[in-house]
Image 1 (cartoon, rainbow, N blue to C red):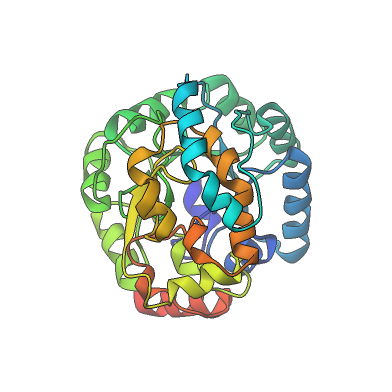
Image 2 (tube, rainbow, N blue to C red):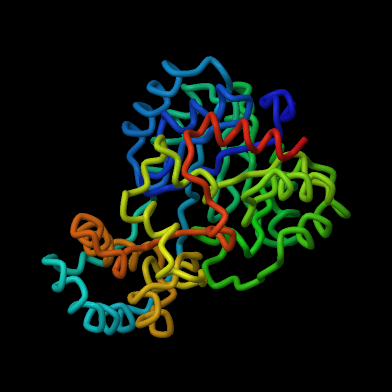
Length: 338
């Protein structure tokens, strides 16, 4: 049973790109929540290493999130045009634009490793795995969560055999979890929970802009079983987010977030900075091609303390983020929830 995995209905969101670390996941699980590792952008071997590290730090359950590979056809000319437009930004931090290519994020190897690891829970983002993939993992005792952004996706995930639905509202930071990259169904979290809860009887993990115990109480009242918080944990010392990213969350220079394709070719919510402002309107619908194009630029910008060229993923509630150790933040959230 999903409820048996956590003492308190608080889940630390899997944040790909380095923010989710074994130390963060273990700290949250040890505090009675459910920590998550983010396998996106990592090899299966790297993922296995992080699972082993986390198991050394906690005996409590924790989860792993995996990206479902897409098969979208992209317009090569639009990629070339985007390359030309953003080249000067990469040069300004001393790197070249990366090669625009696609990959499956080591999908098959990750599935094999996760089955071997017998995880308590595995969640999927950017699509719904086949019922065969789901039942294979369930056969070793793993619960399956699928991240959804609308009712149609929720029904598909339920039909494929998912145990839990992670329901992502438009308020969420980072990438939209839509099954199709071109999907632009944008529902607020509370409305989406009610729509799905009205038609399906699966446990719901609510995700999107949740920062405080009162937010957790609100989604539980709306029908969710647990709340998933990402941005709220970004400024914890256990988070692997870059110091520049952490500082930006509290910097008065950044006043709002927006959903953009500029950094990766897939819609994602982040702090509005120079790169987002300049290139949002011309970014092609091409994930992960654009991600690979901008990756080195974003990394170099972080090393040069330049937040204007970084993907500063953040939910709408980023102003409410708190700089606390994960265990203390958990204590505070539990107290606020009570």
